[in-house]
Length: 420
Ligand SMILES: N[C@@H](Cc1ccc(O)cc1)C(=O)O
Image 1 (cartoon, rainbow, N blue to C red):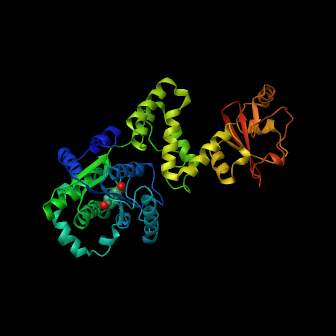
Image 2: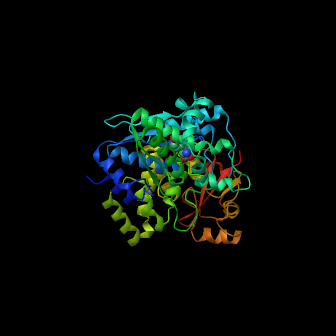
């Protein structure tokens, strides 16, 4: 069996760790209990959390014991971020989002078997902690100099806005969590994004001081794109894992649009494909980039992982149908709505001319160009070739009474939406 740390390093999932040799030995010796925390700062996890979930899963598949922590307590405080002080959410909101995250993370881990995952909420041990106990029993172990030197704190301290005592204290809460999980479950490894380094060490130091034990941390690198733009930025903000916040169709599109220069790196990080499979896909990128095989594997695997096989199949069927390789009539309304959601759109009334619609949708520059395109046989409504410049979008053209898919040539799409 390959060394799991080697495997994770090969995948590009490791940025830094405490004593690498000791960690490697610990992972080789037997099952290690490890954890990663997720704060309810939104109703859903996103692409950044996905990296952490994959790391948890890889370690679980290698026989180790995961704990996914949801931050019912830390979510009420807020991890200091560079952009400034957070607005506190109500306790009800935090509780609701914590529940949602709990069920989301559970889907990525095996809750049964020989090394089942646990899902815990840090409110269970932080909720009843009194201010006096917090200051006497925990606060005494924290040196102000160390706390102030933490990257995120230092940056905020030097910003115009500064940092509240509330957010400044966050690192202690995360330290308490690691110690609690160490005491309860013999958890000896915490993982997280590289921006979490300071928070991870908080627990390492607390456990060293109060339990005279040494534990490990390991971080994942920030995922970057080769063109320098931010990974995971879409029109709707983040790449959400919740199907209500980002349709599986849009989710699939995000991955299938990965650049050739990024796709192999993303396959290693976001899929469970083997070295051989990835080597083959790498060759495909070099030899047949236009076929986008690697991108399709990436998008299919990640969408299947997050939304399941059935939703993924529906997405693939829909995107084929949009481009004329399948039956648009067969798509259910929700799938079709998701599929046309990101297309340029024009609102029309039944009876409007195709020429006007494709001009308004931006598929052609002018009415003259529209007539020429139709004359050349390059305009389609719902995949049927338009044969006359006089053609109209009659009521029957609107799928589910709502959408007519307009296409210019092979690839350029728009949607005409029927006025309600
Ligand atoms: N601070 C982490 C979340 C977290 C919360 C509690 C923990 O014990 C660990 C991690 C983040 O913002 O991503």
